[in-house]
Image (cartoon, rainbow, N blue to C red; front, top):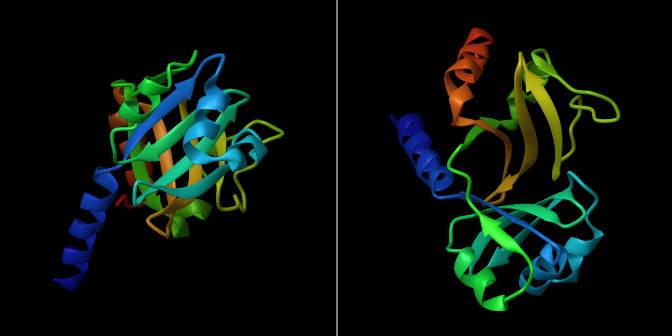
Length: 174
């Protein structure tokens, strides 16, 4: 029973997180204004954990001026008043699935990653673009509320396909 209660608590904590993408000509500038200069030092597919308005927040740099932020608050209400040439979006087609980090070694068996990216021994605060079968997926290892997690981002259309592949390998999600 205790394990079930822990699982439900974990599900609620992770379900509150939303994915926000910030991009545009001023995407880097906007991200720096909100989170500080440290985001400019991130290489693509690297991330940091910060606190914004007393809530945990994960920032993943996708490319030079594009960032994906995992945050439970209304980030659009912070970005919009800045009036910069950047946009902020939540994609209704994007799905998130969380896995315990212990299952990374099993995930390596079914994911295809192209060089120079590597999934084996993926360090914390890094992501890799990959495919699970024919399905593109972003695999991001980072902390959510100080707990190491593997976060998968993929199309909502692919949920059944991804779950079948994970089930086949006896991977459990949060």
